[in-house]
Structures are given as structure tokens and as C-alpha cells.
Amino acid sequence: MTLWEKVRSWFFPPQPLAQEMVHYQTPPDAADQYRLHLRVERDGRGLLVVNAATVLHLNQTAAEYARLLVQGLDEDAVVRAITDRYSIGPAQVRADYRQLRDQIITLATTTDVAPDYFLDTDQVKPFSATTAAPYRVDIALTYRMDESGTLDPEARRRVDRELSTAEWQQALRRLWDAGIPHVVFTGGEPTLRDDLAELVRYAEGLGQVTGLLTDGRRLREMAYLDGLLQAGLDHLQITLISHVAGVHDGVVGQAGAWEQTMAGLRNALAADIYVVVGLVIRAENAAAVVETVRSLAEMGVRAVALSSPLRAGSEEERGRLQAALQAAQEAAHAGNVTLIWDLAAPYSRVHPIELEAGLSSEQIARQHLYLEPDGDALPAQGYNIVLGNILRDPWKAIWGNTARTR
Image (cartoon, rainbow, N blue to C red; front, side):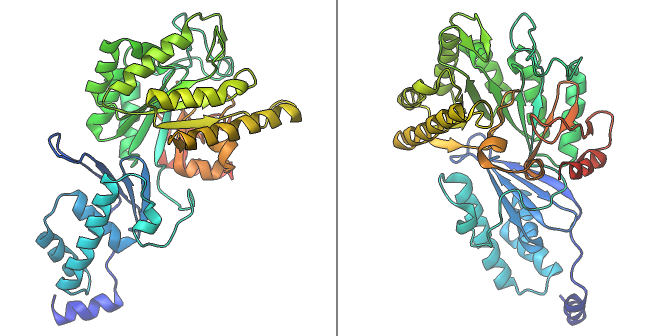
């Protein structure tokens, strides 16, 4: 850098990089597997998503370091790029880059690390930062709940069609172009869609992390599960509604449904995929919830997502549900099972983020949006506010409409 360039940089700081999304995934033969998604915001700040689980907010300089890391540049190339833009000596750039690189890679390959403390940065409250797009979109491919086409009663009045395979592919492309690194396929029961594996493969081809929320019954078919894994599915949540004979997902009369779900869960646990079990605590299963959590831990389940309709029913019923939820949490801790609070829920009035974390719809929308089977965008599952349609409306208009949730 010339003397004039150095003096100029003191008075005219470098302009932020262009807004973009960059993605890195380790090669299949790498000893440590991880994925990094970096979204550079309009003002130059960065949003680094590590393994679709940890979100790091980076200032402009850190975002530029991270971008060069994700793009795979070697250390000397990084030093040249940063010293060309900032009045920082090569030795300092090299030291700063090594520190950030080592911290990110360690975070990506280590579990149970507190990222805000580990990265030695100022703590950022969850969902507090303004972003150009959410971190994740939950996609309800269908509201059908069984092979006969029965609809979730709450959804019956909301949508009258499902997007086709080609339309969902178009929607996924629009989400990726908007800078959204993570999608979760939910419903209804998404495995009733014959094109689920095809849609997972398409999203993975774009670079997105993909998850699935299911009742697990079709996963008892090993060929079906293998098809999803070969398509690239990254994580799986199997939701348990009740442990009462003949009751599953709110539908009465499906004998053996629980056994089918357990068979699917056992197959998933034996496969090479991250598995979370979602347990919805209701009046009919509250007494058995501790036993259920203990049984899941014995099966090898390492993560559970708990939710309960704590705002419904009488005060006495809410008290019993609260006690059952607390007991389930304690049983999970005792069984060394991780509690997950920010995964999707099936279409119902039960929403773990809204009910358990006490967050407003504005805070929820900063993390993820929800698409209905016809492509309508909602701030989150269960919010009857249509922000627009992913195929008909510009992304900026949809995202701008989240202000209506405040």
C-alpha cells in the first residue's frame, strides 16, 4: 500500500463488500465434517452459520476474513487481500486471520462450545440483529396427515392447493438467492409427498442445509430412509404426540402408529444423520412423559425438543402441563440428553419458540419464516399473518412485511 493509499484509507474507510451468500462444505473424505454458510449483509456485516446450528454475527472486517476463509483462499492470499483494503500491517493481518480461522474451525468440529464466549466477541442477544433474510425457512410441503389425504383441521381452511415439484424448486431457488442457508421440510406429514427426496436433493444442490420433521412412520422402510440420506438430508426430527394406544398426531384409530414411529426412530438412530425427537406434552401423556424421556435416552436419543400448549385449557390443566414439562427437562438432563428449543413444530397450536421461549413474533421472524403448502409466507407456524407468496411476490416485499408483526 502506498503512502497516499494509507492516508486516504484513514479518511475514506473501505466500502462494504457486495451482499452475497457463500458456502463451504468439507470434502467427503475429510476427517472432520462441517459446513459454513456466510451471508454478507448490505452494510458489510456478516452472518456466519456453522453447521446450521450456531449463528455468529461478525463486524465488517471479521466478515471479510470469514469470506476469504469460506472461499478457500490460502493464508498468503488472505494477507494480501486484507492489507490492500485496510491500513493494517501484514503481521497483524496474519495473526488476526489465524485466530479467527482456528476459532471457527474448532467451533465447527467441537460440541458444547458457547460461541459468544469462545470467539471473544461482544455477546449478541438471540434474534436481536436486523438481517436481510431469516436464518431458516420452515416449509410445510403438505397439510395432509395420512395416506387417505386427511388434512390437519387447523389447516383445512387455510390452503386449497399444494405447490408442484417444479414450483417448490422455484421457491427453493428464490430462498437461496435471498440468502437463506437452511430449510426444514414439515407439514402435515411431508413424507406423504412422493417428491420429498427430489426436493431435498435440489436444495442440497443449491448449497442449503436441509432438515425434515416427520412422524417417522415411513422411516421404518429402510429403502425410503436410504433415499433421503442419499439425497443429502442433514438432520431429522421425529415428533411424538402421544404415548396412548390408538392416538398419534392427534388422529384417533391408527392402531400401531406408535410402534411404527418407534421402528422409524430406531432406523434413524442407526443411520448416519443427526436425530432430534420432538415430544409434545399434552394432558393424555403428561403422566408418562418422564418414562418416555428415559426410554428415549436408553434408545440412544441424544437430543429432544419439548413443547406443550401451556396457554390452553384451565389453570389447573396448565399447571399439570407445566409440572410435566419441568419433569421432562429434568429427566433429559439426568439422561445426558440435549434440549433443543428452536426447531420446527408440526402444524398445530403448539410452537416451541412461541410458547416456551417467550419470544415475540417479530423476534421469531428474525430467525425464520414459514411457508404454507400454497407458498404463502407467515412470520412463523401458527401466525395467521400472510406476508406474501414466495412465487408471486418479490422477496423484499415479503421480508419487508415482517414489520407488520411488531
